[in-house]
Image (cartoon, rainbow, N blue to C red; front, side, top):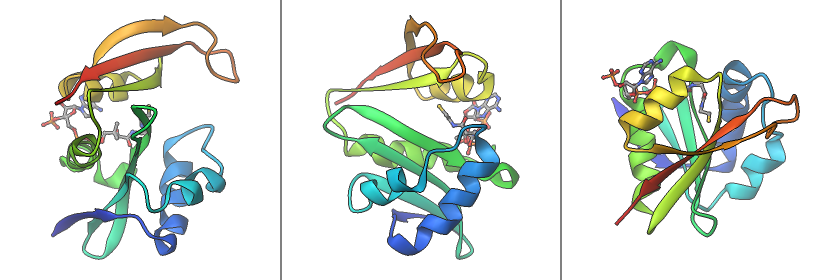
Length: 136
Ligand SMILES: CC(C)(COP(=O)(O)OP(=O)(O)OC[C@H]1O[C@@H](n2cnc3c(N)ncnc32)[C@H](O)[C@@H]1OP(=O)(O)O)[C@@H](O)C(=O)NCCC(=O)NCCS
């Protein structure tokens, strides 16, 4: 059974694993430690952490979301995103690589719209799309 719950210190190693399987440039672990106790949730399937999402309430920002590659397209990302969005107000924004077509489709499905192109946003020179969703 799938369960969404708040992230604890003990979840960080599993999250770092998912992060490394999901991104060419993973976030350093300090980012995850810093968000513990905030709007940071994990998805647990049969006692295994299979995904996570972080929403920075003050900055109205989706910091990161990822689901283990073996568990995608099962509604886990959507459940995580809906959980963090419930704790956010007014609007939410995020940046996504222009090449990340899957994530862009996912965000659009969840009601985000493409707002702006951020040229050379990433360290390797790739552009980002700034996406926006109105909340409340
Ligand atoms: C983006 C991500 C979190 C989506 O997680 P997920 O659990 O697979 O998503 P869900 O199963 O909840 O998908 C919900 C809907 O989004 C859309 N969607 C999700 N992944 C998609 C894909 N690869 N292609 C097309 N549409 C997709 C679909 O409409 C899907 O509904 P459906 O499966 O009934 O058609 C996941 O692909 C991931 O971890 N990617 C790598 C990390 C990443 O890029 N994160 C975002 C960085 S900005």
